[in-house]
Image (cartoon, rainbow over all chains, first blue to last red; front, side):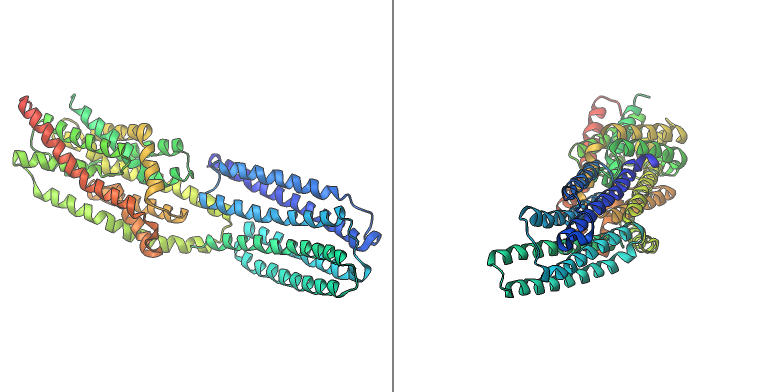
Length: 214
Length: 313
């Protein structure tokens, strides 16, 4: 029987590797953002290009998985579910990379009075990502728990929305130059995208878990 | 002995047509490779024919009691041509109906049609889809509960279902061999040309040959066209079909695996709503069912007249 499931075993392993790479990418992003918001208080300046490299490496693995799936691994309905889930999952580090790029390439400096709120927004979005990772783990270990964690991701996404709205209102109520306000808003929206996309990916995982109940 | 060629031809056409009913869904949806399915199917068909094919032989022995070896040749050849034609069109058809269509023609012409065994066969034909439907409903609920209790992740779920499809397909192939081998060589046992054992061996081998050489086309039709099932439902359909056909192997009446599959699919439809059945393809298959005995009956009439003109019957 092992012969029939060689491709499936390969996919299981590659998915775990993919998750580890996404973790590294998100941690690098987290350190990079902390440095932007807190300056040297957060430690030495991380290499921001590394976030992009890690994201690219995760992309390579995702393509590997897709190629194996286009072969004969897994049941047809599982192939579609897994491809959809991976694409949704992949959009999370993409969003993180975009947020970091905006700050670095547009040389945006966060005014000191907003730094705490930006840090709070960053942490809530990272929490959403960590919950998404736990959701993915339950999907492969204990699918009954998956829907409960999906709700927790949803809670974090709502919290992120509230912080985003508050921050945007505060920024646009200030005496800052309008162009600076728009740049700060872009950073806020880009950060909030992380939890939005985490919620989408988590929803897909919930469907995968529920669909397999007869 | 040359008359046996038509029996081997019929076995080949049966194998090429009916393999779709046990491995069609799995192969068309690329859950199992065609060659893996074909080899497993051929092996288990042969085993089923050899170990449990004897019961059906007795039924056809009674139905084909009159006439010469050439009459047996006409019956088998007409049925084989009918099934091959249907296979060429990509329709899964009933070999049993083709054989009985030819037998009825010969029985009518010779005035020796025995109604007792014929009624038994007809009753079993009706019972096949109905029984398969009921079995599918019961299995869906029972095995569904077990699957839910298991709480497996998507990879374990996948693995279990793929193993289930391979095991159910192999069992279905075994049941196909046990039940349908009588269609292939039963008529020759009736004429005393073969012992039941050798009839089972030759029949089993010829069905296996049909599976290996010409079953791909119908497998794709059944898998892609007839049903849009999820993997669990597909597993239930194959298992229900296998159990039904195996039960009729004990009764000793060759039945249609195609009808058993459609019955099981309807069972799934009862549970989940009619969307599981593609009515356009279903209509084509129903046409094939009506066409099969009619064409076989007509073909047997033409062949019989030709043999009569040549003074061979």
